[in-house]
Every structure is written in structure tokens, then in C-alpha cells.
Length: 181
Image (cartoon, rainbow, N blue to C red; front, top):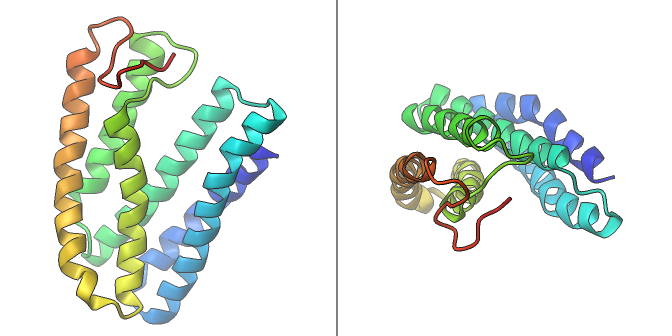
């Protein structure tokens, strides 16, 4: 069931990207509906997997990869419209690639090796797309906050990548306090 919810989110990637390429209110409303469904499936899949005992390294990778694809598709689509700087989705692709390489190839873990900063960044990437949608729906007063958040995430993504690079030489530690294994 949890993987089915993640699969639903994966199927929403292309429609979300399409709706994010359009600047008008009608497509913003469609994008918001898709975003809400994606968020619900993201919140529900983990607890369901834990409750049913179906948590696996593969299902975690599927979930993280789907989140990555959903968020970056929306950010690249927004960059196409000029509402996000291209550097942010490019950095997210680089950071996610580093995350996978560090976890599976450098440290040879059986699942992704996360960090607190990376987790917070991942959540805030979702917020960016929602804020942009809400701005298109009329909440223009959020534009300055969105701009600040975008550039804060550019910086924190770079910091997260630097931390992962710095700590990649250590066998089990990322700056989380308790390493994920």
C-alpha cells in the first residue's frame, strides 16, 4: 500500500511539471490540487509502511527518488517560466546525486544515508513550489518571502553538499547527531 501511494506521487510528476510551466490562475489551481495530493501521499506512505512492516531500503529509495523528481520537475518548470533561478534545481540534482553516490557507492550502505540539513532542505523544496502556486493564485505579498527562501535554500543546499563531502571520509557520521544506517 505504501509503495502504491509513492507510485501515485510518481505519476503526478509530469502533470505537476506541466501545470508549473503555465503562468495563469487556472493552471495554478490544477498545480495546487496535484501538489496537495502529492503531499498527502508523501505524509501517508511512511506511517503506512511502518504500521504494515513493509519498510525496506528499496521502498525508502523509491520514496526519496519520487520526492526528488516531483520537486525538481516543479522547480525546473518554474525556472522555465522565470520564477525560480536555474541554479536551484541544478543544485538539487547535484545534491541528490551526491546523496545517492555517498550512500551506495562510497559508504556501501543498503539504504540512503541522510542528514538533518538535507531533510530540512527537502521539505522546504516542497514549500517553494507551493508558495509560487499560492502567489499565482493571488497572494502576491508572499513574493519577497519566496525570494528570500529561494536564495536561503541555494545557500543551504551548498552547505549540505559541503557537509556531505567533508563527512564522506568518515565511515558512519554525518552531522545528524545519530547517523542513519
